[in-house]
Length: 284
Ligand SMILES: O=C(O)CCC(=O)C(=O)O
Ligand SMILES: [Fe+2]
Image 1 (spheres, rainbow, N blue to C red):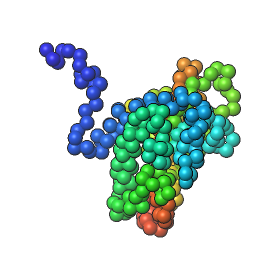
Image 2: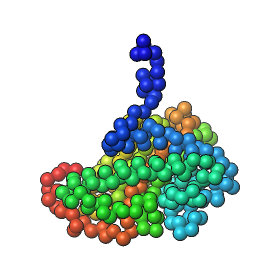
Image 3: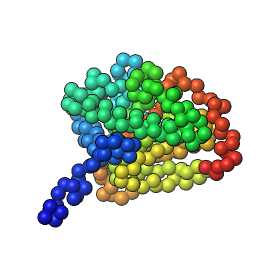
Image 4: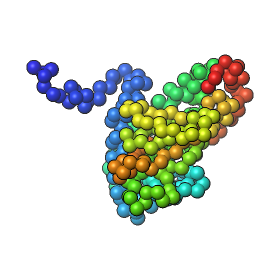
């Protein structure tokens, strides 16, 4: 009988995507298909020679503020500690600004990933507006150019790979990602199951592990949204630590962050939102 035979479907190995394309389907699509393949592509990029990788270095593309590759040790988010990670900030989606020539299919894959992140991003922007009793299009009207033109909008897809940490390096003064809050409206973060992400909850000084929920994206507001909403939505401090467990430390970690930014021309003014009434009725 068919039902007794182990099939890809019975093992849940075939993602079923309803063609109605509801937002849940977009989210499933992101997690099950696109993210893992994107991480594979990025592994391919990390394996290219340093010489090749450096041709894609940040700010080398014309008019690029943030677009491009950032090698391990180049950034210090907390201002002090070097970071052990390969990052590729994607703000331009055309083939010539991506390693398409070295990794055929890279740019098409990233483009579909971005379509889904943008769709989910607009959905969240609408939900945020409604939660603040503003017109549903309040934020989407001010986020018109997300990943369509980085001269007008700084939305970025950041691919990340944290290499395994060797025993002789453990305990030395570096971190996977130093403590910081994001700068954007909000971030959607997808991480693999290796862990290490920690946050400080609002009002607390203690670092706490986020953990990994398969299929979930972590949504974190950035400083821009915190200013816009007069701190009604808070930008959480976060960091990625090197795990203490030897076997986990010896494995790499992948993540992808989608930083949703408003258009450069948008005026960020909390007076445009009626936050005072919210603050008195909420204990967020
Ligand atoms: O890799 C992660 O999980 C977090 C990355 C992050 O916070 C960032 O790049 O801003
Ligand atoms: Fe961050």
